[in-house]
Amino acid sequence: MSIQKHSRINRRTLTKGVAWAVPAVLASTTVPAVAASRCADAVGPSFARLTHWNIRNPIDGVLLSPESNRVVPVQGREYWMSQSTAGGSRPATIMLEAGYLADNTSAGILKPGCAYSLKYYVSATDVTSSARKADATLAVRMIDTGGRVMMGSFAQYTTEQRPLSRFTTSVPFGVAVESREFTFTAKTGVYRFIATIEVPAAGTGSPPAAARGIGITSPDFALR
Image (cartoon, rainbow, N blue to C red):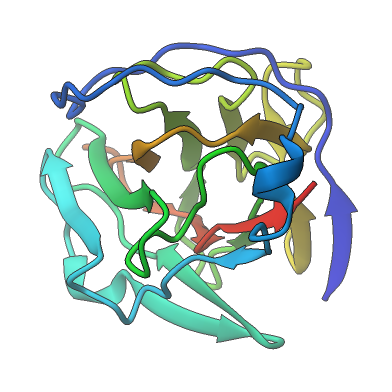
């Protein structure tokens, strides 16, 4: 599988399912000297850590085969893949959510005062049957410790295989699309990573539509 760099995407705010309120965060690229000595890359927990991930499959709508949405290994990376189709004529929504504590204890995945670059990969699969094909979309954002979408963190992807606007990235089949660079300096508190997948519906036509698959890796935080 080849790797494709993410094109530039503007920020949009999606707030469904976001209802926490914790102290505010200051985004910066300056790392104090006293903090630099304890700063290191942070590897986010895998999807196998069900106590860390809150996966609502779905959070809205009905899926024809929710059990087909699962962790799929692809060339050394674990993707949580949506591979189902929504029932009826309404799309369904899946939400993947994880929290990342920033503090100076051993429980802190992130360390306050350290600058990080968020990284993840997105992959897509095509429908192998002769059914009508319908495209899924994936939206990603980071929420700061004050419950706000972090500027520059929003990104949107689709399985649609044609050139799109600069706001959405098309994910070619068989290609690992790397997220564009997004950096921030951690403050004490809990950050949230949220991925929302909109799954197209089978519809009422004949034959019914089948949704293409789209998936994402658990994010990592590389030291800047």
